[in-house]
Length: 114
Image (cartoon, rainbow, N blue to C red):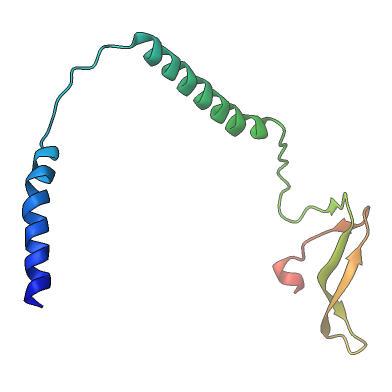
């Protein structure tokens, strides 16, 4: 075991000074590169412009219409598997599912009608 330890110590003594020398800070003055700077700034502007365009455009094609509470609306498309309450023979509501075809009207029930 001491033989392995002495081999490791001798390897570290040989390579450790070289590693320390290589890890010292070295400074190199870089030459200014205005062409590279302008090319990079143009690319960043183009990227941000595309991102902004993608964020703004979807809002231009969406139309929201406010419907006051209690007003009926007509379904534009069929709704498949809508959860509905159906009145049973005894007058009690029964949970069920049904397809609502387009053209049907939907109207919320008021609090006093529940």
